Amino acid sequence: MPAFLTDIGTIRGIGTAVVFIAFVAVMLWAYSSKRKSSFDEAANLPFADEQPPSASQQNHKLEDDKP
Image (cartoon, rainbow, N blue to C red; front, side, top):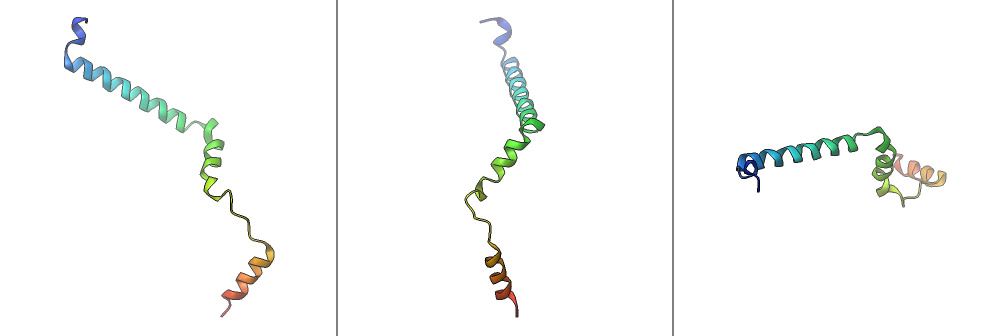
């Protein structure tokens, strides 16, 4: 092993640089405008199997809310 890699400080510095580069890469990927549509679609997945209320259901609900 080369002599410069035997120092623990150098190894920790290289590890810190690798983690920082990975962090910046993930941030660029996550905030890329190309990914917005797929993230918006994924955000709405919990509501995918809900049926929109029909007009008769909405009118019935409004009648129930009247005092």
